[in-house]
Image 1 (cartoon, helix red, strand yellow):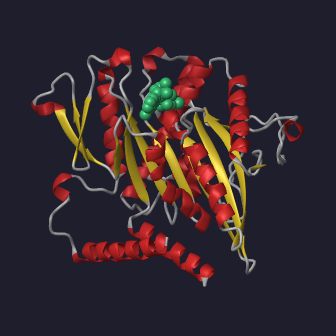
Image 2 (image 1 turned 180 degrees about the horizontal axis):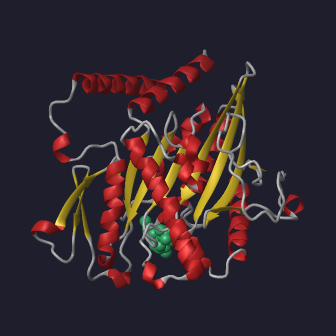
Image 3 (image 1 turned 30 degrees about the vertical axis):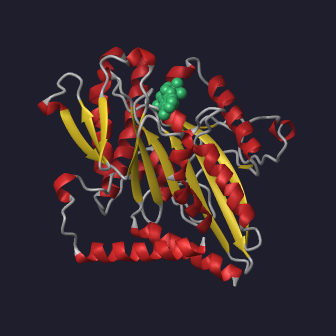
Length: 390
Ligand code: ADP
Ligand code: MG
């Protein structure tokens, strides 16, 4: 009886999720720093809409409206943000591939959302913690195994951030090596079947507790620093991808595999090419390539195009299995109040709006199609059914 209820709950839950669509866009607004208190962009939340006011022309033309699945004000806490992310994270336990990525210009709060600080842990930690808890709760029904990989994509090269020679003895958990420690750029396997990893050569670490994750992230930070002379520049120009591989085996012996990618993207700001020469230029172009490919892929998915250009960059190739199809994608669009970056802020919001399946303004007509109304009614009854059981 209990097991059956769990199963039913799970599938009802996924049906609700499916009805909501597979691409979600949340917008998060960073609080103003002290030195930013003048010349700030005003963000006004109204009925789930975001109105942005250009500090240069706060009257007429300066106001633009956007609408997203969720808008987090500057006072939103990490826990609040995670609460709205948790359902997506949990669907990984049911075999869905999920990708959560943070987009926005440097300084807008991407790393704060994804990693946070020791005091205010971000989504990566909270998500893994939740997966550990869920796997413990379900242990009588399904045995879960959770493993992670952490890589950095910089200049269209994929670097293993968990490679460490004395790792197995230094850390209180077992580290499996599949590659060489000196690998600089990892191969991405493009046609990934269920039991293959997209990055077969990146270090794969079994994890069981938050402490394991904290240790791995520390190692990742060290490796990131070692490989770079100008760490700050590199970290704003590289993408970091934490891939969580979940494998579950239920009592009947059937196996389910899925992956959760947690991505802290490079800054989305345009780099003034006239100021960059030589190596720097190559870097700028590559960064534009990986980010603009992700923009292309997300746009194509939102428009339901038949061809999705995954193969055009390392980043989209790596994320292929968790963007589109049955996979669930959550994009955090980050913006800050700094008046000088109004242009960049608008371009972030415009892209986010394009990806968002929430339709803006007039498109949100009062008379909804009977299909939508029917789906809404179904969602309501499923919600009720869920509420009664959990
Ligand atoms: P990014 O990764 O996009 O470059 P960061 O996450 O490093 O930006 O954020 C820049 C600074 O702003 C950091 O000092 C960070 O702690 C702070 N910050 C960002 N978002 C928030 C927030 N929601 N609340 C409090 N501080 C924040
Ligand atoms: Mg950052």
